[in-house]
Amino acid sequence: SRQKKADFSNRGMTLEEDINQTNQAYLREGKAVIHKKPTPVQIVDVDFPKRSAAVIREAYFKQASTTDYNGIYKGSYIDFEAKETKNKTSFPLSNIHDHQVQHMKQIVEHGGICFILIRFSLLEETFFFAAEKLFPYWERQTKGGRKSIPYKDIQQEGHFIPFKFHIRVDYLSVIDEMYL
Amino acid sequence: SRQKKADFSNRGMTLEEDINQTNQAYLREGKAVIHKKPTPVQIVDVDFPKRSAAVIREAYFKQASTTDYNGIYKGSYIDFEAKETKNKTSFPLSNIHDHQVQHMKQIVEHGGICFILIRFSLLEETFFFAAEKLFPYWERQTKGGRKSIPYKDIQQEGHFIPFKFHIRVDYLSVIDEMYL
Ligand SMILES: [Mg+2]
Ligand SMILES: [Mg+2]
Image 1 (cartoon, rainbow over the protein chains, first blue to last red):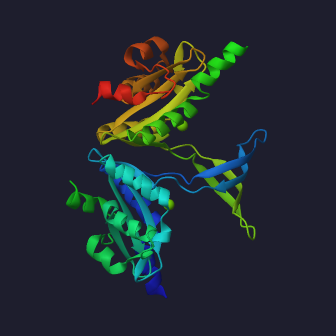
Image 2 (image 1 turned 180 degrees about the vertical axis):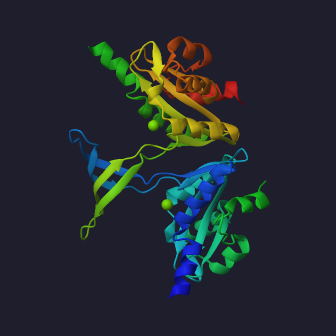
Image 3 (image 1 turned 90 degrees about the vertical axis):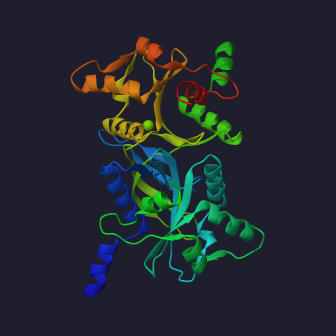
């Protein structure tokens, strides 16, 4: 329907697109320098045609060994992962890989600000969830416990990020409130 | 010759490999969390064969919009680019792109520690060169000035990084000395 379409264009497409738009706005305004890392790819075969650019002819997606975004804000190191789920009642931990959690622990140990942005896409809600809050759920899972974080816990322990037109996922406002 | 071969294996292959080995050592020792960003690739065509992994069938190398390495050390944001040259008397500025320099300026403005590691591969010498030292050379070049940094200037304004077996390019020791 027309209404739905209008909504959709206001709210942005994917979480990743919204974050990229947000990071561009932060950069333009001189607020922070935060970029998405390129998708890791294992390149196997490259063609070098005469008089034109090299063409990658065989390559495979590699699992990321770190998180997707990092950068600097007010002199602090920022590091985060963004995840979307269609689930309405919980966030499945299968969305995250063990080496990503290990990376997040290292960042926290070194004094960085580390978190995940979780979007419940069907609820159209995005939350800031600190890495320190994630770790206990992760440990519990590896010991045979619950394999997801209940939506209610994310609501309580995380921070709801309201949708804004100009800066779609204003996660730095949560950092200002929580850390700085 | 045998001597040459032995030397080569001690000194490592490329600057990038030496830095990766160095970063792994830093990570293992809990000293710093610094990673190379994946090579940026523009993916055009992907095959999804049944019962096996997706294969990228057409992709192109994209120009990096930032630097190659970033991370955190002693709570500080670290950001750098690594460049090798076969030149013996100067470092050609054509090795660096304008948007990388703009990125470096943004990092410095936000309080990050930003630099380039320059290796003169035929001299087997690696230098730490602070971004703040690079900027005047860059400006001069854009105004029609010299298109390279003389080796002597890099020696004087930069910091020589001695080759070590255990940590091949120990750039954090320069940061300790200069910034922290
Ligand atoms: Mg990811
Ligand atoms: Mg590069």
